Amino acid sequence: MSFEEYAALARQLAEHRRAGERDAAAESERRRDLHAAADYLHQRLTAQGHRLDQLGRATGIDQPPAGPTAAPGNDASGARPGVPPVGSGSPAATGSAGDPAAWPGPPAGSGSAAAPGSGDGGSVGAAGVPGRAGVGAYPELPGVQARLALPTAVSPTGAGVPAQRAAVVDPVVELELARRMADEADRHGQQAEVLAQRPALLPTWSALARAVAVYAACGAAAGVLMLTLVLASGVGLVDGFTLGAWICAGLPALAFFGGYLVLGRWGRPAMVAGTPPRYLPLGFLICFLLVPLGYCAYLLLFRALR
Image (spheres, helix red, strand yellow):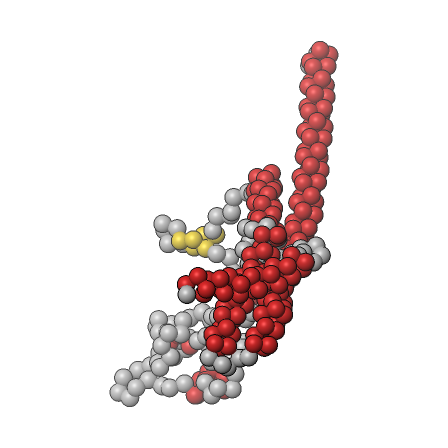
């Protein structure tokens, strides 16, 4: 081999080495980017979990305690179905399975019985014992070994072969799916916060309109009671002083405190910073003016109809 051929080979090896270094650097950069993206998603999901916990506590939803779950196929005593427990009186529990004298012999009149090691092809052992149907020639694997056994697939020839391995997961695709799910969780979380900031009573109304509606409704209810008292006064059940006291002070006060309590109970959002306004001067004015004005309107209507 000439010197030129050695030089070309050396250049080719150097080029391969530089290409390998570039690939290694690119793979290292890719791994760093993946680790940074995974750390960012972990922090984001942790913050989402804390925010959801706050929403749950604010709305009165508590997480159920995680109780111990039994493994499938096992009961509380740890026994597997189909296997008798120790001490149940079965041959496997009492040890009679290991005593050949305790096994039932062949039926009378059969003429012959296969002896162990006779070589005549007779079945021996637990699989060949009469009266023990369903017992195979191989012992059953314990629960742990059965769970750790490799899955097998049936080939066309009938032989058991190991199952195919799962496809390799691309971390970039998985991180992108996790990011999209985190974005969807953020969107639903924002919707939940908006709904949590609305009260149960008239959620689409403003606070002022809600307060006016509640105090007016309570004043209207007090007006119905006022009409009842007026009718009772007409038949002599209530005197004039009592009627005037209820109309001027009692019923307006009941309407005002009723509206105050309703706004505090159903007009308060689940999540709100501070105490929402209840507009006490406006409520006082509405209640203490609505009932006397209703009584005056009743008197005018009564006189007009007469």
